[in-house]
Length: 196
Image (tube, rainbow, N blue to C red; front, side, top):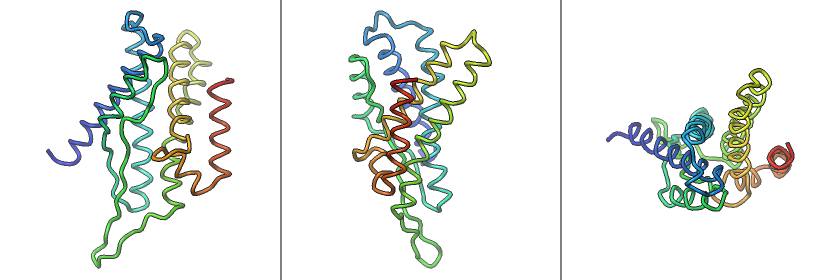
């Protein structure tokens, strides 16, 4: 199996596990209350938010000239599903790993604190953009407001959880790079999740 097909398989499995976890959490941790509608909406909104979050990291890392690939974390998959029975989701099923590349002369592109901070911020930034899109869609198509509200909540949660400043989460790298940017983004997400 080549690297690309392995990466696709791992990100698909991670997205599925997160969709299951969020479905259970939104059913209050009670599997008997889980419906096909909740699961279908979860597949669409969670997969979109999670996959684009990870691809955001990957895209920015590669723009800086690093080699970047997604790798799932089996324990994180189980933890996401197990925590969902408590009504919350520990959303860390894997991560994009960044490696230095060497040019033809053996010179390596070093991962600086600033670049690592920007790469880490790109994932939550993608979730914020998606959340805004869901809000706009809710206004444009009020008949589907519940679906778009679900998508908003999922994406704000993914961004907020990832911006917690504990290693290996994105927030720890953003904080190490720029405390003001971290505080601004984290504060915005807290307000967006708990008060909007």
